[in-house]
Length: 275
Image 1 (cartoon, rainbow, N blue to C red):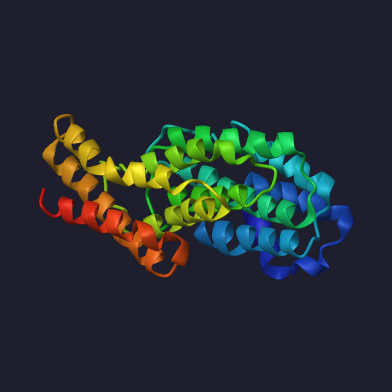
Image 2 (image 1 turned 135 degrees about the vertical axis):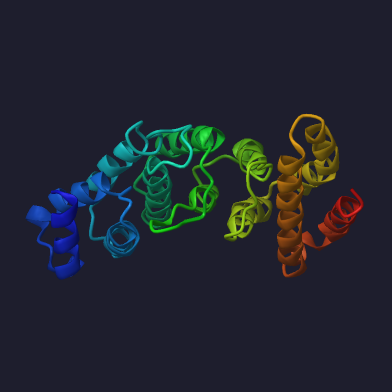
């Protein structure tokens, strides 16, 4: 189904009206166009329809499994990986958001194997390490929001009982490295979304010393970057680190489990204002 046909179909049919005989055809068409630069089709129609179908369990486990396999492929999660300022980011970003939905459903209904969930973990880490396009809202095309969307996927991932806590440090490191963005300042609440899976891992039992160590080392990391990048890029980086720590501090104030770490965050943040 072409984009115009799909847009017309989704604009005129509610999910409960889609007969099962045609549902697989429609779902695959939605996946094919998940990265459309048309924000109304991509965000308001395709993603919202996936939400409704998956959350209301209107797609069976077998078809969800088939969708997941496609999501993890080079044609979707890794489509155009490494590119910047191209439309391929919409496919990658909304694919990771769809993976988050599938993981959410697995956390409710337990239909994925442990091996498959761990494969998702490996693919998400590889993806986030390779993603170069971190735009939030794109003029005339709507949300790309790759970092926010993959953070949502990581959040559902670490809620899974099929993920061993021994893998948390690797997940933490993958997310943490994306704070160190030197080409732009995150302005669309990416830091807020990236914090959520980090807090979830702490709540699940990840030792606070892992997060504390990363925070304490942040000033040293900034010092090393200062000798390697242009001054403008350096101040982008400083702004991202400050914003992340301020958002983290807000989360800690409202989470009793993290109250002991507030002083570490405050101290590091104050040191950054002295740079």
